[in-house]
Length: 223
Ligand code: DC
Image 1 (cartoon, helix red, strand yellow):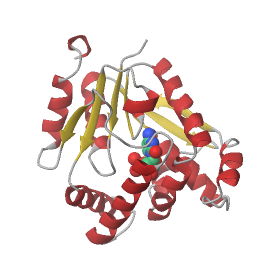
Image 2 (cartoon, protein in one colour):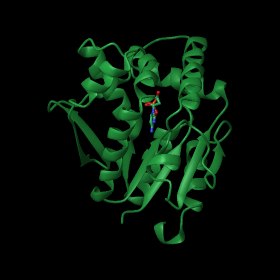
Image 3 (cartoon, helix red, strand yellow):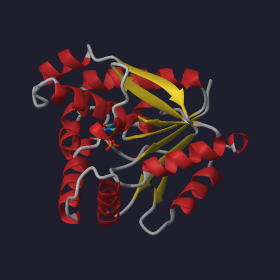
Image 4 (cartoon, helix red, strand yellow):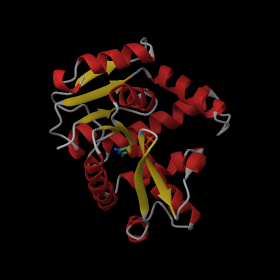
């Protein structure tokens, strides 16, 4: 059985940067589970599927094929032979993703895909329900958080740097808090800190410090 490091937390807490760097240091594959929810949302929008209509979304998502394979230290995703890239990072996809992610049938499809990735090797998996529902038995589970201000600042900077959007910090914060609310209050696999997960508040920590904290808490044979 592969080693799986599971990292959950709200948007903008730094999960992606931390997971990527931990993966790089250990030679574990980085798995961005949010990207799968974003891909499904993006495909709904491209094909004119109303994301507020659960039956339509579920019917459509069952027929979306996402190929995944290890590439450059991460699990890379392809749809119809193409990499989605930043098309899944637009404010429109971001705004609709929680609607798609709250559907149990969609979560079941993605959960089973994520579990299957353990056959590719050791993983660092980030998301909202990795520690509670996807890999709840992992001995290396983390809940990464930060203040809403710090999270909004990071997200906004990232959007501007990547040329995805140029929204004000206030707009980014409002959208982030709305998503947190939806992700934490949904009935199926809501975002919450798992019992036994190590909580790390990254508001005043550097990326390196967070990574060191994660590495120090791993089972000794994994380091
Ligand atoms: O981490 P992210 O912003 O890329 O996630 C996109 C959406 O998917 C967000 O609404 C939370 C949701 N998500 C989820 O419900 N479960 C996961 N394991 C990962 C993401």
